[in-house]
Length: 189
Image (cartoon, rainbow, N blue to C red; front, side, top):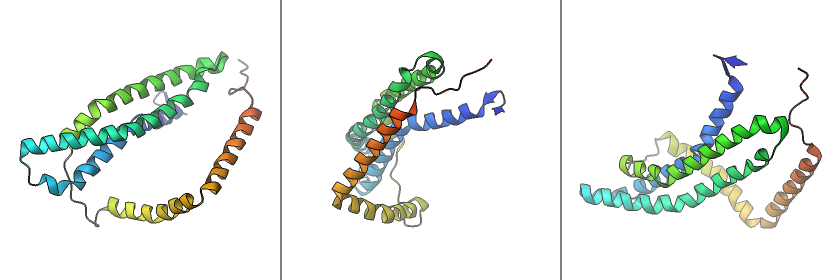
């Protein structure tokens, strides 16, 4: 389906790609903002210069801590594109440019997460007063009510969780071996 001369499927893929690219920045901004809000009481007594230094210190420490997680997640996404980059023939000609573009964009986003994102977070983040009336607070409490029993069960049942993971891995390997090598149908032009 074409929308104003642009394939709507490509627009959807671009939206998903953009969400994945900014994921590292979202993780950093969210964690730094949470830490600044959490330490709001300490910030009330500081003058402007001390406040900026305090926010900078929080931002450096917390952004550094979260970059490990963000980079790890982004590296996994880059590794996923290795099979696409190894394609040849028509499939390679069609999918390699997308994989290369996405990989370069993700590497650029990683560089910005090291530099630009922490700077802007430190400059523009202000502590906010969270109350139980906020929709986000109520939503997170609801998610925690569901999540906490699941994670407690998983931590108690480590062998079961590992067995399920190994079973899924084995099933995936089976599917990979029986899938075949062609992604595109034969084109009769």
